Structures are given as C-alpha cells and as structure tokens.
Image 1: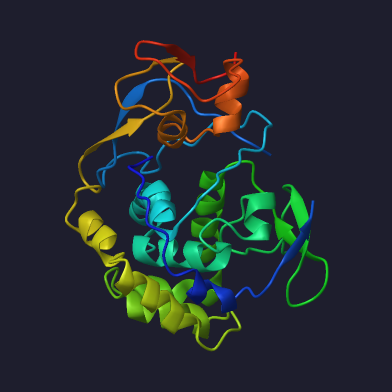
Image 2 (image 1 turned 180 degrees about the horizontal axis):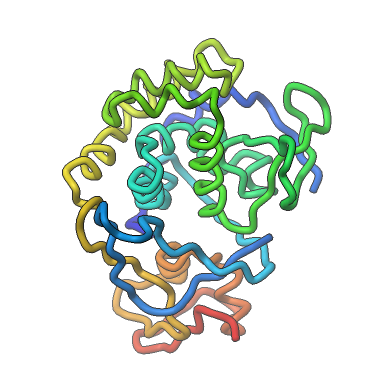
Length: 273
C-alpha cells in the first residue's frame, strides 16, 4: 500500500505482549481493477473503502520490521479511523503488539493481526492456537485487510468498549488505558506497551492526518489492482506485491515466473481470471 522501509527495530518489546505466546493449528482475497476515486466526506453514502475480493485463497504477507509493518498497513488504519472512529495510532500499535509486527505464529497462519478469538456467533474460518488455554479458537482471514475491518467492527459493536468512542480521537493514551480497562488484554502493562509504540514510531501523526481531513471530507485516490501492470523503472516484484496487496508467490505463480527478475515494460498479471 505504501513505501516500505528497511530498518528492523524493537522486537524486544513484542516478547511479552498482551496476547502471550501462541501456537497454531489450522476465506482469502484478491484485489479488484483500476484506480478509483472514493468520496469519503461526511455526507457520502459509504465511508468504507473497497475491500479486496475474496477469491478463496489465503494471502501471505511476509513482514521484516516494525517500520515495514507500519508502511504496509498505516493507510488501512487511517481509512478504518475515518469509517469507525478508532484512532489509527491505536489500531497500528495493537496490530504491531498483538501480531508481533506480522511475524507471530498466529498471524502468519491466520492473518489475524489483533488476537481476536472466535466468540459466539463467528461463522468464518478458524485456527486453534495455544494462548491463555491450550487450543483456543481464533478467527482466520484470507487477507489482512479483513482482520483490520473485523477489529473495527469488534470494538465498535460491543457495549463494553462503548466508552472508548466518547474519547477524543487524538487522545491515544486514554484509548490505550480504556482498552485495558474494558478487558481487551490481561497484561497489566498493555497500555504502556501501546503508548510506547505510538510514541517511538510517531503513530499519532497518522491520527493527525485524518483529523486534518487529509483523509476525511475529501476525495481519496485508492489504488486498486489492474488486470495487468506494466513494470516501470525502480519496480521490484516485492514493491508491486505491497502496492496491490498480493503476495510475491502469487505474482510469480500467476505469471509463471521462475525468479523475481523484472524488465521495464514487462506486462505483469496482477489478478487471476
């Protein structure tokens, strides 16, 4: 979705996250074509951005650093903030902490970035994973964007989190403490860990961008994947996979590639027929 950074920092903070150590056992998505202008103004009929199409294939997202996690998912968190009112900084910090910046075992097996368990009424796919108890049921998603959307729905639709939505959207400290008070995590240091990530990586800047209406009340360009992409100077298979939220492996399979070598002007199939 965005530019990727290369620095790998601070895995140590993730070691004792609120969702604890996890062991897993075991829907999927595809982008849609073209660049579309979406109206996200307050009087728009729908403030939600287009979600990837579910093609029944599980999409893997290898992430190598906290910075890369932020660059990959920050825009999604901002759109979720616009649609549901949850600070993007909180969404990103929770995602980093709960998923081990996308590298945790539960996340790599399920695309579950927020440690959300099945709970009563969940009828989607599941994985079984050791958490507070052995073999607990967790939600599984074919694409990370659906995990981010489900996180927004999860918080906004449960009465125990209702008080959070009375807080200012730029008061990330109150949101962090409120999540712990509402029972999102058992770790006593959960708020401090979220706040630490937000301040170290300046995640509050994403909240400010939304509140300045860079994302709200304006036209937003959303890059939606074409049927075929023409390779440009500076492109790599990895950067293209991030731009259109498909895996490198899927791109190679779709284009019958033996390695990741690209040439300028090459036609690269992005969406399967």
